[in-house]
Amino acid sequence: MTVRTMTVLAMLLAAGAGTALAQDAGPPPALGGRMAACREDAKKLCADKAGPDRRDCMKANKDKLSDACKAALAARR
Image 1: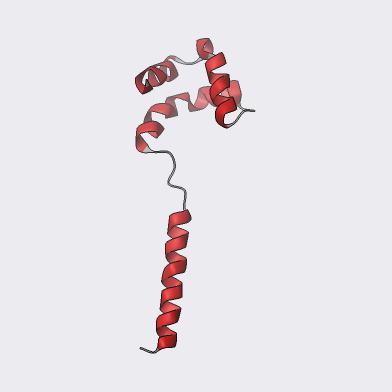
Image 2: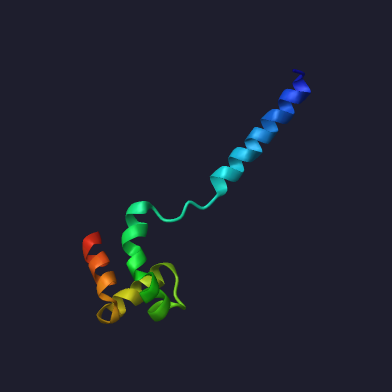
């Protein structure tokens, strides 16, 4: 192999690795499974919020949360 061929192969490998690392893997399994129970509640009650504001909104509306979401939040503690 020539130096030029090896350089091109190295660049292709680096580009492929960067693309693979940049893909969104989603939430961690431990949180994703339990907190999926709250997804619909969050959409319904706090759709206009994000991040910490959404968490605060969910806390403010805890009496309106579904039983499944309440159970997921209790298991998280």
